[in-house]
Structure formats: C-alpha cells, structure tokens
Image (cartoon, rainbow, N blue to C red; front, top):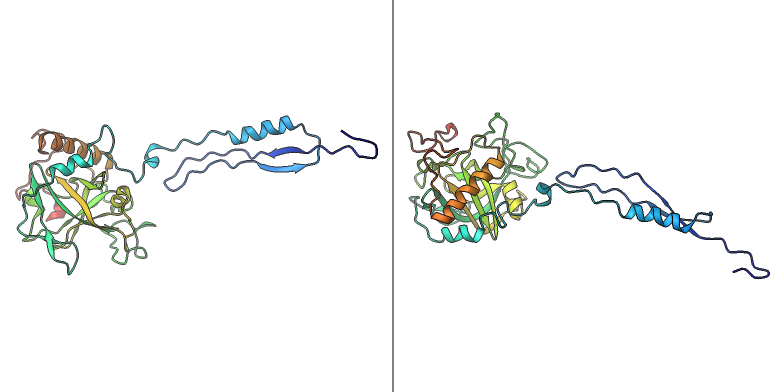
Amino acid sequence: MGGAGHAPPVPLTWAARPIAPRFTPCGVNACHVPRRGVLTVRAQPLTLVAASTALLALTTLPTPTVPYAYRTRGEPTAHGDDGVQAADLLARVRDCTPVSRGRYRLGAGQPATVPVCGLPGAVFWKADMDIDCDGRPTARCNRSTDPQFSPTAAYEQSNGHRLDAARLPYVVLPAPSRIWDHRAHGVGGGSVAAVVYGDRVQYAVVGDIGPREVIGEASYATARRLGIPADPHGGGVRSGVTYIVFQHSRIGAIEDHAAAVATGERLARRLVNSGTATPPADAPGRRPPAADGGEGDPADE
C-alpha cells in the first residue's frame, strides 16, 4: 500500500518460457524426458495466477513409459511368481554325479578342480565366469575393449551373420577332449542353458567353444543380465556361477533369445518339479540325436 512520497511498488510476476515437449522412444542406454520451462523474473504486468498455471502444467507433464525390456535390463530373466527360482534350481544341482572323465581348470595355470556333472536331461558345472566378447564387433566388444577379441565365434546366426556377444546371452563350452565331449551328451551350438548367479537365473544358448582344459565363460550379455561386471578386460566373477545345459534342447535359430527363454523356462520347471529335464520324444524343438550321439551340428565336427 503506497504512502505520500513513495512510488507504487512494481509487481513481480513469474513467467514460464515453455519449451514444447518432445518425446522420443526410450533406447537401451537412455530415455529422453522433456525439458522443463525456464523460470524468469520480469517487471511486466502479468497475473501471478496465469503464470503459476503455466508453470504447474510444465511440472506435471506425464513421464514417458519405459518399455518393460529396458526397465528390467540387468534383472533376472526368470525371477518372480511365475518363473523358476534360482534356489529351486540350485537345490537340484547340489550333488554331482560326474559325466566327465576328468576335471577342468578355471584358467590357465590353475589346478583342475571342476567336473561336469550329470542329471536326467541335463549337464551342469559350477565355476567362475570369464567374459566372452567374440563375434560381431560392437562398441562394447572389439579389439580395443578386449585384447583377446576374435571377430568370429564357433557358431553363427541362422542367417549366417556373426553372433553379437553384447546382445545375445550365450555360454561357452570347452572344446571336445579326453576330459569330456559335449556331443556325446546331446549338447551343441544352440542348446539352451540356465545360468544361475546368486538369486538370478538367466537363460542362454551355447554360442562358442573355448579351450580344451578350461571351463567357466559366458558372453558379455549374459554377465550384464546377471549383474556381473561385464568388462571383457578385467570383468567377470571368480566363483558362484552354476551352468545348467539341457540335453537335446537346441532351438531353431541360435539368435532367437525369446525361444531360448521359453524352452529354458519349460525345461527348468520340469527339472524342478520332477527331477528330470528330459523332454518327451515328440516335444517341439527336440532334435533326433546324430550318429555320434550329439545333435549333428557341423560346427562341432
């Protein structure tokens, strides 16, 4: 209220300079959210009510919906009310009946301590996890990020393209040897596996072949989804990983992760509920064994 000798006060008003919201779909690495308006103070006659309304509208813009696949990245693939729990699978592989003639090393120069064990319809081993980045060169897997990078893996996609270790969850088998020959147990490229770490289960496929005497390796994508450091140069984990590979479970397209998850979930549930992962002879996806006892995968020859 003005008195004698005092100039009337200049009203201070809030004005929002709106920026038109621009929504873009959420990518794997980022989700763009509309920028807020810029708050300024101007000595201009604008009603406080109108300015406040504009500011409120900007601050209550709807949050873009993040696709489920990105929202759960790094979380267990089979974890929840409907999925097979890690604890249930680990209970089934508590005891080991060796199917290998000897034991594997976790790395060059280390003692041979890891056997391959057998279950009805599956084989398994408990080891560490080294990071495999072989296959298609990407921003995460290349000669700069991985000193031992190889541009090819033992197996290819159904269209002849190279596997993408940064995107496709896969595990690595030791090359056939006197210790163990995976082909004799109905396991080969594209066979489905359940990889367990802590309380997480990640379904994957057999995607590469490693050294004859070393075991415990999986792709960058497998590690990332299990919450294991995925840096191919110094990542991985030293122990606590269980690899369960289902026999005669080869899927049609090795790169079809959805098919691997569906097959893995079905076989894991059968293993937990009945103690066997052996699918019926006429089950979808089961392939007749080859003459050598494997699944006739030319990459195994």
